[in-house]
Length: 104
Image (cartoon, rainbow, N blue to C red; front, side, top):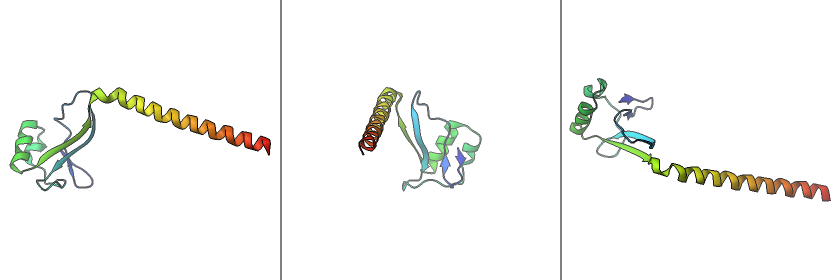
């Protein structure tokens, strides 16, 4: 757990999601706002279980937003389709502009 430049606290250990793409990892208060500190002493010594217990006593929770590893190929195909569509649109635009200039 470390204190970020913007004052929020981030947990970097303990997220055991093999193959997952972790998008955000935040510590939130019971009202849903980012926790800004101070860091519990148990979280400074890198003991995950002690840190989780300290967070629980402070009524804090960890919010991890992730995409599972099973969606990897879905994202790859989606990205490939987007780039292919953009390439075809650009090629069509270039063809139209060149043809228009040759006829003028």
